[in-house]
Amino acid sequence: MIRIGISGWRYAGWRGVFYPEGLAQKRELEFASRAVDSIEINGSHYSLQTLKSYRAWYQAAPEGFVFAVKGPRYLTHMLRFRDESARPAMANFLASGVLALEEKLGPMLWQFPPNFAFDSERLERFLALIPHDTHAARELARHHDSHVSEPWYETSRRRRIRHAIEIRHDSFCTPEFPALLRRHRVALVISDAVAEWPYAEDVTSDFLYLRLHGSETLYGGAYSDAALDRWAKRLQKWASGHEPADAQRISPKRPRKAAHRDIYCYFDNDQKVKAPFDAKRLKARIAS
Image (cartoon, rainbow, N blue to C red; front, side):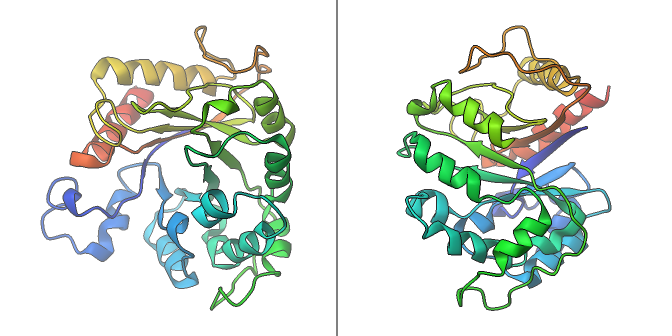
């Protein structure tokens, strides 16, 4: 399964370009979720969202659609998993309504800031905290505090929850890091950007998560036909259970061959309305 999507959907500059002229803002997700296979929810990174919002997003997206949910920056940028204070903050996030996405809940994205350096003890604390299924998430959510005005975590069916980490500091380029991810079944985000962030293609889980941030500037610039052809070939190689011959890995350890892997690939070059059109162009290459 290869899902091609976009990072966010509510951008003023997309109106009248990607979105049809006159389309009501409340219908933008309905439109976007039928143009791509998956969307990253970004608002959850900046503040706790509400049960009402998660339920509305669930209703707007078609059957079979999947959302990735970006974890709170309060955890990744402020608390940084230094101590046990991260536990109630994680509980608040999980109780805020995210589990109401039900079967449309896809991977959770954890984006570390550029000044977040590798610390094996701190990372181990984080990896031990994140829940890997909805029942574990429900139990942790019960420990929420008053920051959640309308807690909801009454999910009944046990579903897997996948996690992916995006790094932006060179200190993570040590074999110890992908080894930790592999042990906890967490994916390393393959992050393509013109910024000076580490780029690595280590396969550390049974799925891959890619973020394509732009070809000319950070969050800007369309991907060329040649670049999209290259990405299509790489995605298909990973999806088939292998890896590209020129894969750039932190670790010398090659991934185990698998029958197949799931792929989640998001375009984040939202400036000048490039992301949704690049997503559709890559999606067409995968389908052909």
